[in-house]
Image (tube, rainbow, N blue to C red; front, side):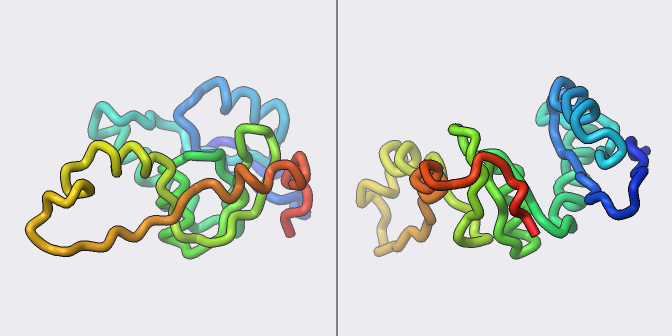
Length: 151
């Protein structure tokens, strides 16, 4: 079942997708009746948790706006599925509008360094296409400190 019942019909409704109970508790105290979240396990270690996470992912993709934390691959998939440019709260606490709905690869330097195929070991010529996640980190110095400007 869903938790949270909107009180003010003019207030925006916030869908929260998280696997952290502490975040849910904090969001309930902060957002009150504006908060909606799906109860149930979200776990990488069992099928029930993975199904629950998939439902959260699909609901998140249907939201009007997606606000995510920096380096959340879960959220990358949601905004890419929906072709929606997300708002990203970065490690400095700034809320920055990304430049694209295309997911970025925050661990690319680790993949490129460790993968044999990146060292010319492939029997064919290949091109790797990826977008770096650095934009919202670089923009944090001039970004607003919250997402109040979301339309």
